Image (tube, rainbow, N blue to C red; front, side, top):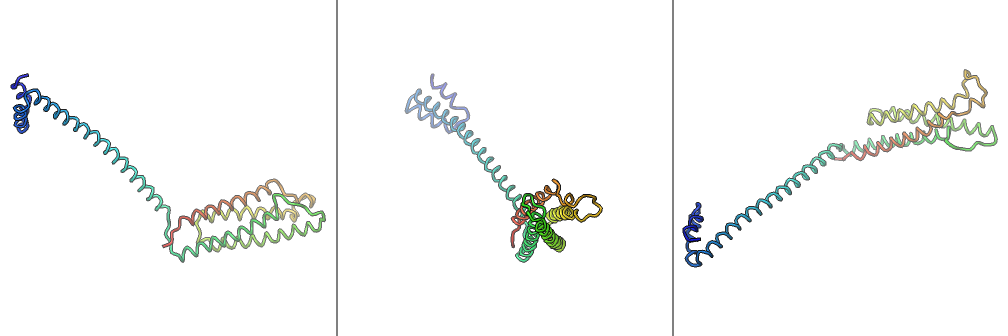
Length: 230
C-alpha cells in the first residue's frame, strides 16, 4: 500500500489526526504508521463497546436499586397505615377496659365449664351431686350478670368487632343457662332424670365459648400491637 492510499484513509474528517499520523509515517515508515492507526481505531471501538456494556449493567443495577427502594417505601407506608397513635392516658384507659372484660369473661367461661363440663365426675351421693350442680349454676348466673354488665358498660369504648364477638359469647352462655334450667320447666313433660341430661349440643356450646374467647383475646392483642403512644 502506497502513501496516497494511507492519506486517503486518514483524511476522513480527522484533521488533527492527519498531522500526527504524517509525522509517524515519516519517522516509522508507512507500514508502522498503518499498524498504529489500525490499533488506535480498534481501541476506540473496543472502548465504545465496553462503555455501552458497563452503562447497560449500571442502568440495570440502578433500576434494581430503584425498585427495591420503592418496595421498601410502600412497605413502610403500609406499616404506618396500620398504626394508631394515641395518648398515654387513652392507652391506659383502653387497656384497663380490655383487662376488665377479659377477667370477667374468663370467670364466666370457668363457671360455664363447671356447670356443663366437657368431662367430669359425678358424685355417688345424689344429694351431694345435686347441691354441687345447683352451686355451679348459681355461680354461673352471677358470673354471667357480671360479664354482661361489664360489656354493656364499656360498649362505647371498645372496637365494634370486639364488642360483637363478646356479645356472641353472652348469647351462647345464656343458652347454657337455659340448658341447665330445663329441669325446672314444668311444661317439659319428662322425668326429672331425663330433664337433667345435657345434649351433645350443650357440650358443644361449652367448647365453642372457650374457642371464641381465645379468638377474642387474639384480636385484642393484635389491636393493642397497632397502638403507638405519642
